[in-house]
Image 1 (cartoon, rainbow, N blue to C red):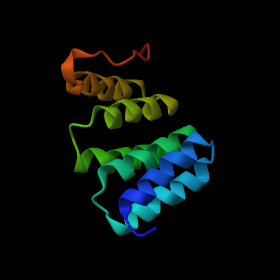
Image 2: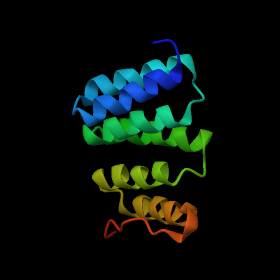
Image 3: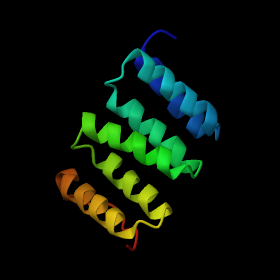
Image 4: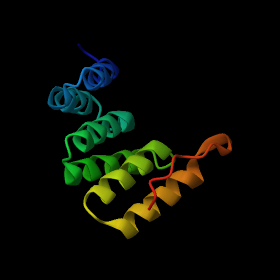
Length: 113
């Protein structure tokens, strides 16, 4: 595979197969090719979050948010990871940002935070 987009797609295929560590590697390949690929950073964060590597997930979500600040899924999943670390106040703030960014008035599922 030669493009960041191909590695990004591979990463999500691996997530759907339950191969989370391999997915992290695929997203890292995408990021090596294009460090500004916000969605690859998001995918890496998602894989880390599934693996309960919350600090790594937050770091990846932060980079995704830096590159694409209006991506509500990055904010929402950052909230999930923050909650996984017991950082409730920060999780609520991230969830509120995700809700504000949700397009077309569609609600994001509550985390009961």
